[in-house]
Length: 446
Ligand code: GAP
Image (tube, rainbow, N blue to C red; front, side, top):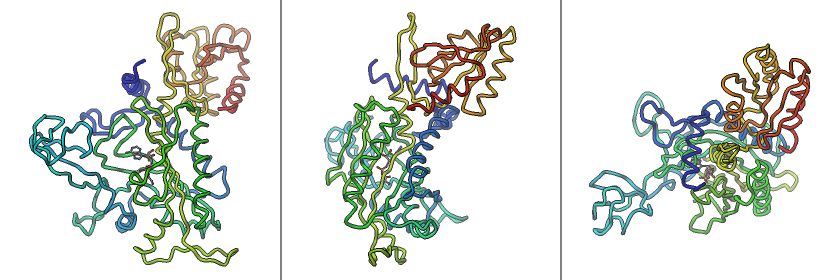
């Protein structure tokens, strides 16, 4: 399968099966904004739950937080986003299109007579680069004036920094400790694209770990290891995961050191998570701009200091896309193409499809009763329309690991068939044992 078509096939499957739809589609869509359908919302929720379990529930040293999207505008001055969260842009005076100054399609140097617009081809029509801030602005209250400007947060991290003392004191944690948060972030990206890879509205799963200065490099290495392990635990092909270290020129304004975890997408190696050693940049700046002391008093060492921060920052949408890309496969089965999403069962949006073989002989009644019983325990889908083979195929495309079919032997012998998505093997399981059987499989290495 050519890689260029894989993304097209995936976008089409996502729409067909209800994973992801274009935002405001009936109005022609809104650029690089996407909506999650019934299966997509479950898949992304499973990603977020798994992250939350690993970061918050499984650890004694990390607390959760859900800070507001809107924050005091001074937060973004202190964070450096007002001054530094910018991309250089050029306009074409002829066709009015706008590009990043480093757009590889531009021939020549923007602002110079020989430079050529990549869309209309006019020479000399591109302006000199101008800096463009990626934050979305809006107004708080009834008056649209500069004093009322607020921003939609471009990262969730700042909500953690400004709450760090609140969390520290109320949870009675001691340094080293972390704060984890999942939430929406917004960036007016100039070159968004590749489906849900780079969008203007997205969700981040961020954790800020507060440590004693001097121990930051050591914690940074630990977190690098733990985060890579987490991505591997999602069942991703390990050969498609790699590290990318930021060179000095690539480092964000807040970072002392940074590594990206990259995945090999059909459109190249790209970042899915960043691990950053932010030093004391953030707390130092918030202390300066707010005028409030943000130091920590270390009783054991009788020492006062501004903690350093190690950040792990992953995109929930990007991880969801990674899972979809990694799981997509096509197989030839009896002369037909079978499309399968080989998701880890624990991440699959639907765990089991329940089917009466035919719509007669009491099979729908038994299947419906079974379905109602199973859906109390895990996500299920009931389907009685079309040939059984087609119903299996629909579930294969949705990534559903188990298909449970009620047939003639169910009525006479009290057993059903359980079909496995990957092997397509079927086995007979007692009607009263199906729930336990599937739960056991979901728990085992998944
Ligand atoms: N707080 C640090 C921070 O925000 P980042 O590298 O700009 O760092 C972290 O973003 C992660 O957020 C990325 O690895 C990616 O997964 C996700 N992300 C960033 N911009 C995104 C966008 N426009 N669309 C989707 N996900 C995005």
